Picture (cartoon, rainbow, N blue to C red):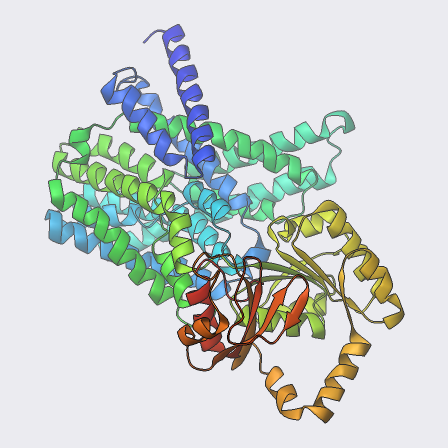
Length: 624
């Protein structure tokens, strides 16, 4: 192909990549789906992109592209996020990865009757999920932070693990003999060399960015270039060691170190890297997909489809449930993670390159199995898991109400405990190191920073928050945060702790719901004196008992009487109050409900939640 034709083709691929990204953003699904479709249409269907288009350069292009993609994902992997779900994250990238490797290998061996070495090669590649497919899902499905952190961590780490495992497995497939010791040694050597090189490159880049004047006029641009050069340099240096794919753990290590190093111009660097990654990702996926054909995908018929489906609906859930045992994830969250594990760029790129080499070595059957199973799994998981992720989350009810609590002291932690017990996604914003450590030890998600700083609040996720609570012991700070949130963001409710009763009016004038600590304490003492049984029961709200409120919007509630509704409620739950036009009252049996009324349910915790699900299925218990 002539130089001008190749330039035109590269330009076409980039345009297709941009259009695919726009379509994916519009439909809110991973862009991988549209990139593969574009590659298939302009490859085997129209013949615009052929197998010999890039010649022998494709392998090097893909290698550098994957390095940039892995670096981008690692750069976004913040240690603060890792603290939110450390046990689950560690298990997913160890136990979960092992289950995926062995489970998929067994499926390939049994259903496709491939040799064990080929089966483990395919299993190794399908360990990966990857940030390129997980991140778009998490943007659409705002699950609890600890769940999102585990999925993101798994994607970044297992991308690297899968690539290195696959290289070792490939050497076993192509070698005449290979002992277990040789396999373990090869794997360890690649990881070790990659980590050392990544640390060295990250150290040099950090020193340049923090210690050297990058020229005030072009400082931002130079900082971007230093970080990009770090990614490419780490990959190139590790590959020079002669250990194939040592470059991926190198760029992952460098990315994690630099992403957590508090670099200057970090926001501009992240934007630049994101744009570069989108371009690279688009190019590689379309180029690789153009090498596919329908016959490649369906070569093994129903058996091949069965392997892809089994990897997604049997092996994946098994690995997740084994990895997330304990009480930090609910059953619904574990189920959601089980059925949201789409595969992405690493399996696609490495499988394509290995298939070319296997065919050159005369191993046609192994190459066919590799391409068929890997791309079938990518397509099925991206289409069904990526496309239906929001629906799966809504069905499982794992999209919680996000509550931001500014102040992680005794009051903030006590409130967070009650809210999290009801399944809400609570983020505490706190500045004091000892308080942060204490809150994290108790399992809370904590964002370190000053709640009066708009950037800190954004980083904590306030743009998705439904309720913001200021719970510090300083009324001035609480008022400042309330004013900032009210003017810059749009939560449904702002609630402030007021330590001095004389300051209540200042909060009320702002439209903030103020809770006076002194008055609340006096009311609690009065309740203990006059209503001890009720007072004791109220302390159990969120544990054994619960009180919840919903708005009447469903057609099947409008026009019904309280008496009719009572008959449908579970035992242990009553309708305590009905609110209409700002007035609350204990309803009679013949009270007829209207649209906009508010019902307050009181009773046992499980009974109240069941009542809300019956009366208002689209409502999250505890959201009102």
